[in-house]
Image (cartoon, rainbow, N blue to C red; front, side, top):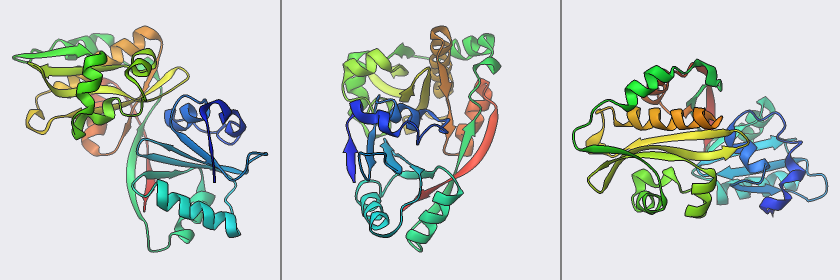
Length: 256
């Protein structure tokens, strides 16, 4: 498998033309993530890894190339959520990794910015939280988020704080100088940002994620950016719906 630098991703754009989610689109656009192909001359498929998410597009390989892809998935993507592009890739994964995979569900929300109520979002943003400040992420907060496992994903897919400040976005809740909750950009593509939300365990169920997410969405709307929400559990889906998102579909992902 050959890894493509960001400047060479144009050769996979036709393979990813049906992608409607932020992460594979952002990888194909050369914005972030890692991409591999079996060959540089008209590749028949591609493998995308961005954060914890893995995508397979194109024609399923056979023979030695299939074995090479299997080895690469085990080496580079063992702990990722693998999203096959279609039923053929689902069948390939299930045959190739028979007895070695498990399936879980994720929940996609509609990518339509017209269903948000700015009145409701401003209300959520202004909910009082004793001693807590909601602040837009800056360079110092970028580094603070990276220090703890629960908050790393607020900015870990951006290689530098400068890249995050230029192309990303995030709002966090602070108790004094302690980061306690946040809503931030997990990934980016043209006109879109994928959202990630997390709260420190002892601060959960206080509405902090709701306020941070409201601030994040309002900023996206002001900039003409579509904030995309992809939930890994029902509570995250419920939070999204409270913010104004509408449920689109449940879909399955594979883990090795």
